[in-house]
Length: 316
Image 1 (cartoon, one colour):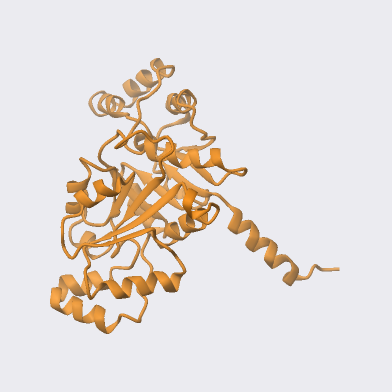
Image 2 (cartoon, one colour):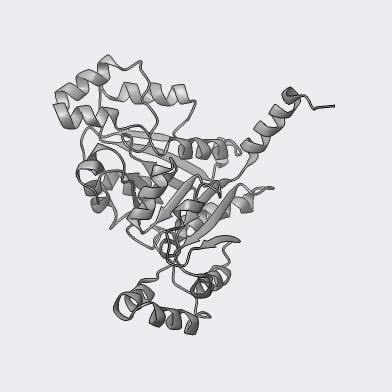
């Protein structure tokens, strides 16, 4: 006798809801491989291979994404079930990548799954692993991930945390247009100017913005936050946008329609973002505009999102 599909559907939905937040990261984002990469650039693949093998018992130093990964994995320590999974996605071969896995063990990072792609881009495995987010130092790999509708960013900036991470919430800051939201409003601004943008946003205040490349990642973060009481939540999120009144209303109504809560929303009306990101003490900031990323990255770990009209005109 065939099973009733109506009895199977809730089980499928529950399984999907209980899946951990999954983040893929490249080896060059997780660890500092600058010396190794310099050898590769100057002396070639074989010299690189010999160097990595000779150093495979020497742990690598943290890279730009290390402390973000550390904080994400710490969430599992305060839960009775795995809520976060980190995957290593690397252009190394397994042979040269052994040093990376040894470094993961030396730093006591709970990473067990990896794809070593032998010089090829790992982007084709991102969807197969079910990644909610992909972080890399390779902009082309990031673009390939975004083309698969997966949140992705090119990591820039400081390797050291603003302060010790023990006991502090993981703080993520997001730009709005072209990151959380589509670039539809940004197109109006760039093509017709600020007055036309403000008028359009006021007229369309009750029409939700379409989702951008980070909408699904924000939704996954929101589900993860719901595992904890608000007063003890290990994650804090912020919208940091150049928008100001009257363009704020459409953003608020859009997030309400998505049933997603952001902890903080900063409508800066064109003010420079860096000091606000420092005040928020962001562990990472995602923005589509290279100028904003360049200003923030000396102070805050920053992920450039090469998406939308700005990057179509000025690809990084």
